[in-house]
Image (cartoon, rainbow, N blue to C red; front, side):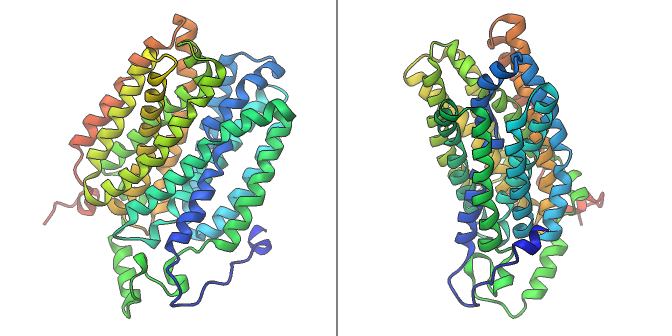
Length: 429
């Protein structure tokens, strides 16, 4: 239905300016619009919704867990649709549905409807729209693919990280129910027209080549060779590096989501006021802007395992250091560290998978990782809530969770570079 309402835009003429950076800009805006479905966006709504609905923090955390897990199940299918239908159509459809789900959050009346609402915004916001946006630039670049995806992730992360500050100002003025409606309308007005009118699936659709290179007479042969060299989803899942990178995104998703979900309360224990705790998203935003640029450039030059290790070490530093935070520079240092850890893990997966596994089945492969990552975020808020309920503090549960990033570092350092022969069980020649 949306494909008929929003037909493909007329592509620019062959020989015009390279459109790759335009696609990066469109993808970054779309990624930024996932903010209402991200934990940093949802976290601002938690306390006023708890008060109105008479729910405990553990009940809301459980609803978030169940809703997130439910939403994650659909993401491999979203990846296959992305491969089959292309970025433009997929983004337009997802943007339209995401807007509907956000407005439906205004009608939440209890635990069941809250769980269903969480499932929708996590499936279509953080999951499907984020997957589509970060995949869009991949066909447009080769030599600078990591940098281009890093720019997309950096700018998009910066935009979405500003959402809690805007929501924190809007909710007291119009109420949380009206604020959900406003966010849904905003997604409609931005994502759907942008996808329908500005997105282009592949450089070949407009007579261009990756990186803006001169068109080649043997372009079809090059495309066939690239497809033959690409991993299928099944082949990719048989490589240890897939699980190392998936483990990094899942670990960062789980623990980072827990930290963000309870940020007001967590930093409140360290002496920060609610306003100071909310303002800590600002250094996280700054780190989210810079880290993907560095990660994208590193992926273009170095093995993914070293970027993975750096990301996990940053996460471990944030987990250990948060209990030492006090108002002032230590709070800023914590915000920078946790923001850099999350952004670097997301950028690592988006930038490294086209290099490791090719483009032909990229949506299907990344759909599995996105499902794992989104599913993992379900457990962080509940784990931290239970830990706090049992011990009166977040410190012990954060220390216990250190085992996850440590295990990912070990797996990443031991995992070999992906080989199609090895994935198929064929000994190298």
